[in-house]
Image (cartoon, rainbow, N blue to C red; front, side):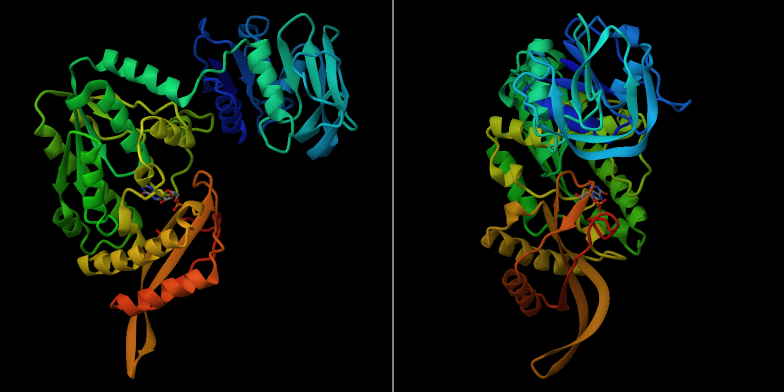
Length: 506
Ligand code: XMP
């Protein structure tokens, strides 16, 4: 495997994704908490950082731990740090070097730059420049304005680059990373979804033996993939619990439960609609709604889990970005909405936790799901928030509002599917606005609520843009909702991006 040392750059996760795309397993660790470098570590990558090496509080690291022991690729801040702490000189550049540049010098026969040609476009993003490098270093690439765009520590496998190979604007970035991973580190590039499935199932068998495991299924991709993996490893010792909180999409509970049974899972459905609704009665504040839902879920889940005798483990569908966030240099970021799953259920469950997907990114979870034979019905679904429709009904939640929203949402989603747009949209949903406006239907004046349609494009939900859905499709959806859903006489479309808006309205 490859270890990526994080100095807090926004690009660190992207480096990890690129390495994984090259079928090499890697892990990110914060610079201030680096694990022991075991024999299976084939190489180390130093990431960039928002800090300047010239700042007093800049992140420090003991270079001797890696340098000349493993192959090292130091990127941006990492490169400057290495130069500065080996007798070179870094200084603030008069202008920030940001954006595209082209390599005008490439050292011949350099292993790191194999198959990369003069003129290759690279992406720079830095405020400091490496002015001088020590004698035992050699410059291996330059651009017009940056002489030390890449260097090599002579007679070692330590390389450094000022530009960012992980962004797509560095046209040969992937080639450079592959050169490092395959030729310099000797990684075999065989870390694929199939390989992951095979080794994970074997590990789970070994770890869990004959123990019983409970897992809460949500209908979403992560918990479903985790369930199938565990099911393949331990069969009926996996006890899945699927809670109907009454806040799912229309007919979703039945459809998903059916699908899970069809997959052979040992699953128990729990109808807790009334319990959730009664606890939500009169609750208007979004965070209080989330808390109420979380609390009831734990109670319901706990009751259901107690029905399984001698259960030892709680399985969760936690994925790698959640783990990175909880251990990152910056620490968990400020809670804007309290929806992080890490930490899971409270102690009173007293179960050991097993998280088979906690090394995977979202797209990898999908690939693993495919390799396990999961159908698009589950794999291709849009993300759906845990608190469900409760946070898509602004203000207090009632059974009546849920029913109205379910009907409107179904018309919306069905039309997206019919128009072939569902898979192009990252997430879509209808929102119930408790605002009344005047309308006219036939000869009658109406005074009813508003449905807002939301559809966004995104990669990971952190940022998002609204989708430019075709007018004819929007027209058809609006028409159908107003004509068929009693209580709605107006439909609007949300044209806000995130930031500054968020995807959900609450
Ligand atoms: P926001 O609204 O923060 O949403 O832009 C980003 C992504 O997170 C989902 N989301 C939630 N998921 N529990 C969840 O499990 C929550 O409380 C929650 N709030 C938002 C949202 O659907 C989107 O995919």
